Image (cartoon, rainbow, N blue to C red; front, side, top):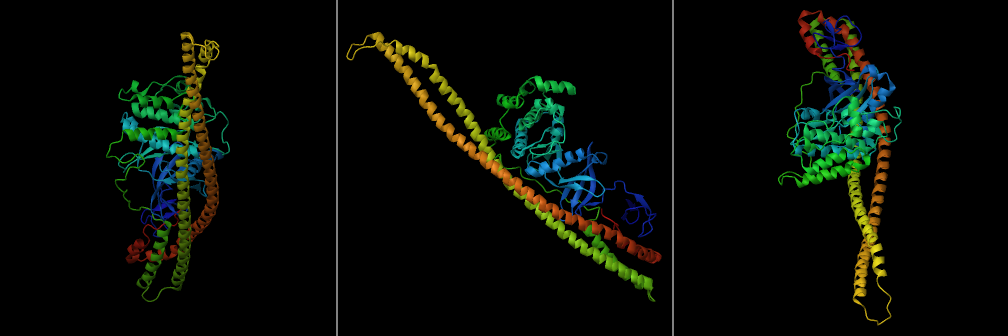
Length: 579
């Protein structure tokens, strides 16, 4: 791709000079900048480079909002496994759809082999940058961990385990009265039911935040994310990690060494928070909180207890303070290019009598007529493309909203299930106590009863017999009370088990509906996207054809010095191809 130094037009191939004004063509510094992707995303600037991908800011030309586009590095894209892992991020995020998880709206592969994800453009900083400045205040830490736990609760409910929770994957948005969290990078996520792309025993994650089961290469459950969140929690409270050392040392410490309480490093950390962090950092997954739902409920209760009376409820998201400014467009979209071509044809018509007051040559009139017809065909294709993009955008928004509704319903059921399981755990404790009491008085009751001799009816009772009867009666009463409590608790347990089974059934039904709906919508959306891609390819080819039709006309008018500025003004910034 080259760009004209005079008019800014871009050309594919290897022309020696600008076909429009003869200007010098120079290589484009970044060939992706200015390109239109999938007929609707105009790439504006590069905003980040990593080991596996490069990220650009782009503009969605129909809805006008900024998006971020992540491209898999070309040297990795040739390997199918890399593509699968890269696109897993889109599939995982699309399966979840949560306000605290980055929204990935599109993904695919271009004709020239570029693999990409389209996601919401975020303005803010990674949590890691905040931690590098030092420990965070307790209330702020609790708010951030609460929001991450809610995001994980939704993900885990939909059978997605992140596997790489760390501060750099937790993003804090600017422009809010308080922190608003977005959980990023589901590229390592595991989804139930997906085909395995790695061998069993492969270790995933970042060593500093890796759960013991990840370090062992064992099967991963949602509890692994809770452990990693516990490490982040610890780091936010103290400004340092619970374990340090080489990669080998870190893995061994995660496997074997108990973490110190956060208050060892920061004395202000209260005992209940110490206990919560240490529970998250338990080596055995069974000893951690039972679910992200349960963790979120515990965090919410703490936040409500410590909430300022003037503060909004915990569930209310922080209110935006401002709307991000719209920046001036440096790169025209496809629809803008077509409009400019329509205007250019009219300018050329106006130049004919000025260049040829005694009458134009027949070839020029024929060339203008051919260009006019070509541009009108271009305009019709442009209208078709806009229609297709509008349909795609509408269907994507509808699908996202449907997933959000089902997700919110799953959240409500998940929190109810966490409550029931918490009540069951407490009831089981009381039931065990009742059984233990009944058992404890069993032998003493028998011994006391053996002390009572057999007397005929009406025989006088000796003091030692009365004492034996009193002891046996007291023990019998304890036994009866324990057995009655046990019966009542068994009834409560049966009720809670029935409620748990009902909630589990509802969750599975809703997940099944969610999966079926998503599959149908994806098939429908894929078809519309294919149609959009076909129209976009036709439009790109037609744009190149228009440039060829216009080249002799422009060259002719540029031969008149008095008309050169008008010609240049007419085609300024018009590109031969947007993609």
